[in-house]
Image (cartoon, rainbow, N blue to C red; front, side, top):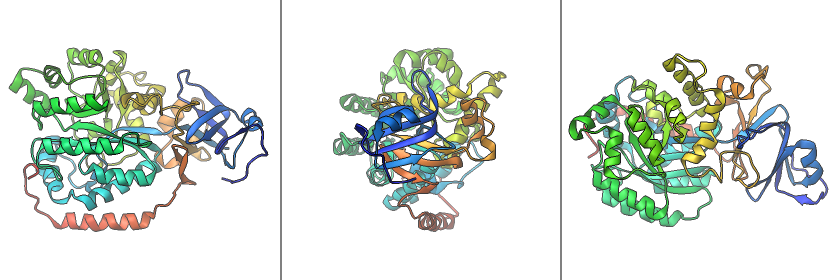
Length: 456
């Protein structure tokens, strides 16, 4: 990276990336082998051949993209970032036992202001270093999360998770709703942070909570997140209690809509899938979490065929156990091929689409992010191709999905600002961060007996 520019050539910008293999993910899936991207005021001004761009534009900051691949930043469609401090705490067990006997009690003790900030800092570092530039999160203390995210320069949708029993920072769902509305008003128009709505699940929140959350999401035009049909246990519980599938129960409540994002959606009937498509509901697919908790494989190819919006998420690291979307994309492609006994299912380009422009559609941000096109915000990553597993390149999408890794990401740019260069996060003392996390982990480990039951 150098900080010298050309003499004035008519058009002036803030930054030019040149000489890279550009994968745009635009409507025509354009690619430019020796491409350049012009950035001004945080937006993409021009995309084209390097020679044409450098002949027309000048900038004080030039980034050499030789032997690198430039593509849109990845979008993590569903996660719980502060849960990084619980990574590996309770593995190898079913979701109900994992959630009620371990995670909920653990959160009751350790989900506080300090740990939420620390866990979010760790998550942001992990996501940026593996190429994620935007994430969609539902958790607690989102005011603390927002401060961390804003300082980091990352882009995020943050939603306070509404749940029937007392949460770490809220005694009731109504308290959470009032808190959320204050956050919405405080961050309206923010360039990087969107406040969304979230209800944990239909087995942990009353239908009235869903209706109130729906009303608020409609009032402010916000994304509305929930977990849905993640396990067979959930499916059977709702069927037995209400005579409806979980998806049918959401429909019966009258809360589904185009801004709703359901995480997991593993256990769906044909009628459920058609209903999601009819209502314009999007699905955040979490293949590794679904596999690790043995919940099943979501019918993503069928949903895509029906025109359902699909993004890819990692879920929280307590059930994954990382935030690497490159790893998640590969798992997505391979798991569906195996479950369908069809190697053509979930081809590489479709998977990359879900993790970029597909994720943007899911969040209602497709006009802003998700592809490298003039007019969009400059959220992009550059990947180092100067290594054995990046050669040869016959199909760039296959290379990205099946060969490249999160650790190959060299440069990360969000809203036109360089947040990582040469694989080094700028302004982050990683050693100090890791030390603080390990101190908290020792406190958690010291509580060998964690009481069972929901948050109290």
